[in-house]
Length: 269
Image (cartoon, rainbow, N blue to C red):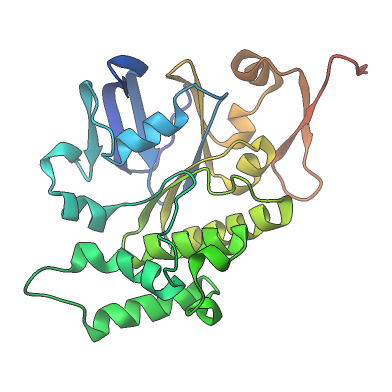
């Protein structure tokens, strides 16, 4: 496995986790470099989302531990975890009739208490986030009236309102057409340029390559490779992990590799 040299704020130590007593990931170790975009890739059912949920403390490992800022994540209070990392789950759903501004404001809940209620400072954070993500003009619209791409920006905005620079995004482009997927990933890239650490799960391999500094390839609940896209994405790995015949060529737009899949009815040179 290729390791990165960046300091890690979030990682896993020999974790085993799953649902109903059946492990999906087992004895998994992982270091996530700080200050870069890491994308977890792998076939359906390999444990990508299970890993992300375990890293976010939504799922308790049956063995091993998740380390956040050098401590076992289980030792933190729930609110403290929420001020250190933000999670965008798969296909989140907002209550019917909730406005964009109200949903984004929920990101400030970890900073509230019975003696410290909503303040002008909280409102300032929400306003700044709405401007940053380009949805200020949608503040009074209901979330359920928006397009898929707009809704993803709103959910990312709520995560940003938590005030953390560590973001976990589980398939943020699911169900989006290519133009809207690029729009969301451009926003992710902007957030990274501001110094945030991003960990996300993506299915589109070429988008994962283009928008990531670090790839984690998984198969059958284990990490089989980690490192820069130019190192990880080989034709051999794509066949090992996905059973995919392909050619890996130079992307004409970026300096990254690009995958050309080969179907069984196509001939190759």
